[in-house]
Length: 130
Image (cartoon, rainbow, N blue to C red; front, top):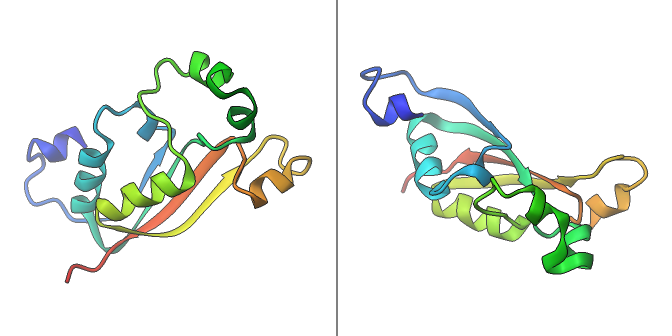
């Protein structure tokens, strides 16, 4: 993305899909990055991303003592499903699916139903410009 922001290559073809697995929580300005991603996607292009779910069951139980804060010192931001959806919409995306995942998936399946799983995944298409 840094190359595109710097204008290299000139007039690149738009991408069909951009993936950002476990990236957004490390960014100092995720909105700027998502807007750049939006600019390199073709119309109806797909963005797929994952991050730690701030609304996971461990954080709800342990609050500020949640080990994710200590382990994630390199993480600059944490997102809940609604907050991530709002950010995506503000950056020109239409979220199509926001889900959570837990490990082990079968044992903790009920956590995903209530969006309390540890991992947050989002899928969004580039919104049509008016």
